[in-house]
Amino acid sequence: MSAREALVDLAKDLAFALVVVGIVAAVAYGFAGTWPVAVAVESGSMEPNIHKGDIVFIKSPERMGIVPHEDAILTNYSQFDGYGDVIVYMPNGNADTTPIIHRAMEWVDDGETMPNDGKAPHEGYITKGDHNIGYDQPGLSSPVKPEWVIGVAYYRIGLIGNIRLLFKL
Image (cartoon, rainbow, N blue to C red):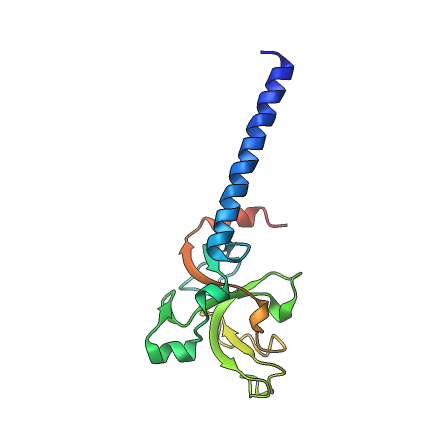
């Protein structure tokens, strides 16, 4: 086989691999309704239910809905060994920051009192890591707006996320 033939074969193999990856990504997006379809957990704030280094699969809030902790207690609904849904969101809506994965604790309307005793500047979710003592608000200046939510967690695989975290820049 000549060098030219080898390069042509390599190009065909790379093109095939790209097509397969594209199809897998399209099917995953079609199923989840959001991108990314999975996130690597970067901290221990959700211990003992979700661990640093886990991969968590998410779906769009439109497909899953979000049940806050306070409502889940009433219906005995739990996810990841706790009442209520775990959401992945952009802190203060900033897409340039690392998303946070925490439990939706309650919904507040515009003007309602938040856990920090401040008035909510808009409606949204009050959130908290399962391992954390306090709520994310007051650290976040406001409740999590629905449009800041990237996805709702529904499944996790332990430790595989450590591979992704190795390549985090």
